[in-house]
Length: 249
Length: 261
Figure 1 (cartoon, rainbow over the protein chains, first blue to last red):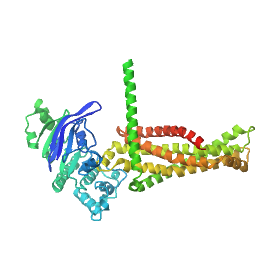
Figure 2: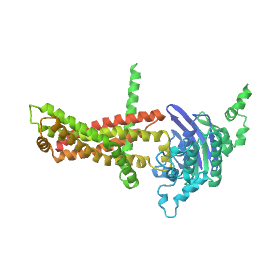
Figure 3: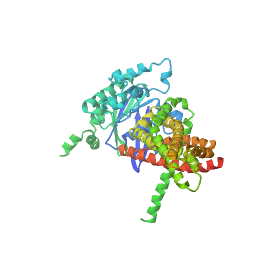
Figure 4: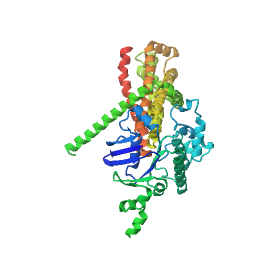
């Protein structure tokens, strides 16, 4: 379980997070939505310890991430996969090298582990064939890079997967493919997911619950159906700006 | 500008400098702690050493040769009709071994490798690759900094030896071609100056400069921000910072050599 308690973060004089509370239960998929620049990615980076909060706490399996020492934070990170907005594949490594990095260090030296098999399985999960293994990230399309990043995220079968804008920059077809992949991976691997996006269609397709982050706090949280029927005009304006605009005319 | 505004600006600059020093110190300690784990990154370090050596060797030969030649000419012109010409050999050997060999090699490698490392790590930083490495449970200091630093240390030693040799050889060639002196006079002058402390000093400077070039480049690269423009600024900043650091270190090391020699 991931618990975020009264999280506050100021970046460059801007109060990005101003008391965020959020609980992500085991096996659940929570989508955090909100306009650009409202601190969705900052929130995600607190979960994996890339940012330290100014106030508040982040607990993963009951362990405080900001207060964890070096060994503990490594243990926490070994349970979490993070899919970055721009894939963040290593330019100098092949697809195979990138996916292997998703496994714990030294894992492939174990006799009972067949890493080639694990890499091929991860590629199959994201609908890619072994022919891409020797390619460098620069030789892949944006959609394929996202898939490789997903393969790297799932190869170690971590308990938590954090997705930062997984469909940003993709055409509608590729975005839809990535959404289907995430949904399939969730059901096959059974991981707990936190997805940050401002893509409303993706959110409603993937989420068990949706949290709307705006002005540094969670403005609303609920199942997709609950949010769809909420009377709050701010939430409605964000979820369906076209309808809100038409209503105002 | 008001006094309080000026004081605020100065205060911010001082604070930024202190923060820089703190981050630099933290990375230095982490790098020192990572160096003994050499088995984890030895293949990468060898790869970096090869790249630094191969990339830099041609330029090191050219710069070493030109500096030896210039040193011979200038020494010869200053000495003509005043002191024995054999001192040209002494001047070239002294200049190349103690200063020009290591320092010019370091400046050449700063321009080629320092900028490259700064830009490479800067790109990794602004494209979240460093953060990705951290989330994958890897230590960026062990994976990225330590192999480059060890590679720089390894590569600088042969490069400085080559620069010294080429400089002294070019000095001889210039001396016998341009100046009114013979090979015997040049060799006599070179022998009269040469002592092993000068060579050792030269070879001690090489790894120190190799460490400085790669470490400073890594530090600046890891602090890059601001997209492609930021990466460009990082490469430039890395070269400037490395050259300043090399010159400062050289000034600090000079009295050490004089005391030892």
